[in-house]
Image 1 (tube, rainbow over the protein chains, first blue to last red):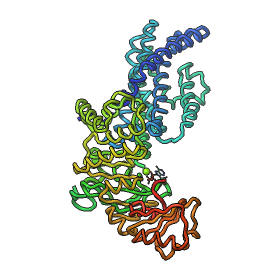
Image 2: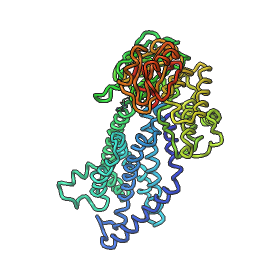
Image 3: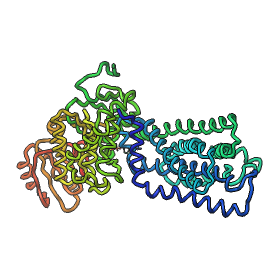
Image 4: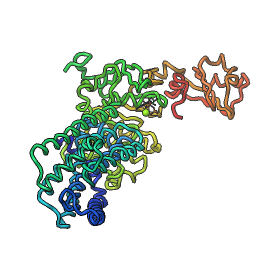
Length: 252
Length: 316
Ligand SMILES: Nc1ncnc2c1ncn2[C@@H]1O[C@H](COP(=O)(O)OP(=O)(O)OP(=O)(O)O)[C@@H](O)[C@H]1O
Ligand SMILES: [Mg+2]
């Protein structure tokens, strides 16, 4: 008996396959652009952060940020269109597939899309000769966690709205600030003291710190456990919210 | 397992009591009772917004009734909706196809949701392509099909799990007459195989030919139910005289008709007169000095029942 979650995932992968050439290209082009512009351009002005070369310092954060963006972006139009325009979810709803199967299959798809983006990033870094074992091993786990941490609540949000204009609000007031103030481009300690605690609300902040700790060998079991626990809390909360918003929309 | 009505009844496919569906303050379906017998073709008729689709969604275990009791295939949908849906075929008013993937992939992905192995899904997909006469289009994108072909694909897809009961919400709307006929033929085949059918339609001819029993809905209520013949017999006279006018007839135009028949409806383009004997009535119309552009006499149909009960015509 085919597992319903897997059959949902199969459909998402089938739809993804049609676009893989275009998306594979953008997966590689983004990290190349990032690293050349920020690393070489900005790096020419800033030489050292916390005792590290700027390019080395920024890379772990950029990978986490890419995962965060992927998790968020996939879960906006990708979810709303299923409810509003594509009808794929209404088709699933006419079968034994349960709501939790739909969400689980979808999130596994988001996870796969994220890991592909992360893999592309790691390959680019490797080609640039800057890949360290700590980074290579930790990235899939940290990035998967941060992607799901933002994908689950975003999926819940997208299933709750009718109007795509809400995505502009989400992008401007949540995703962009989270990207700017989560210690990706500059250390959080540079921020005014009263903003710093806010910064720690963002799952991305925790993922960035995890990535840097692994990259620079400063990880301790305690901090790793706490950061992962925080990301897990987002995933669990988002999962429940998504189940609520899907149920509300689909049992109407 | 016991249901709210006691032990499950094998010959009842659907048992619904006081089924109500509210959207916010608005009541789309208002405490209706619905019984569907196994193996019959059950028709839901009604004008736009009557609550047909909302009712279909409840009966097919997709949406939850706001209140009321429901048993489908002897099982309680509140506890086992997913399991029941595994035994149903559901064709929505919209096709809900994946337009960017191939026709055959639409069938195989859907079949997978029912838990069949990949090879079994391919076998069933091939069978359904033949059923829908879409073999030639198997590897085209679903979005490249014509509207009628997409409809056939949606119907075929709903049959891919060999369902015991099939829900079809306006299966033939938007099809040309020839294609409509093909679909009716397919539905009759299903009926012969004792598959229970629940159908909504705006085509009275379709309902008369296909349905064993019919419910007519309006504003979320059931206004009449029975076999097509019964409904005609109980609600309208045997024959119908239609008087066509080039200008919209008024109550005044219709005034001389009083006495010929107690039952008549004044519509935008004609007056419909329900009588026992059409010939006699037609003569009487002329005798009273009415000069319609055209006058037709025919046997009464479900369409007339509908008009009588709701004051509206079905086809808009
Ligand atoms: N999800 C919903 N939210 C709010 N109102 C709804 C919803 N679905 C249906 N309605 C309303 O309920 C009423 C009945 O709708 P329904 O779709 O059941 O009618 P119908 O008989 O199928 O009509 P049609 O012949 O046009 O398909 C309509 O007034 C419709 O606007
Ligand atoms: Mg409808």
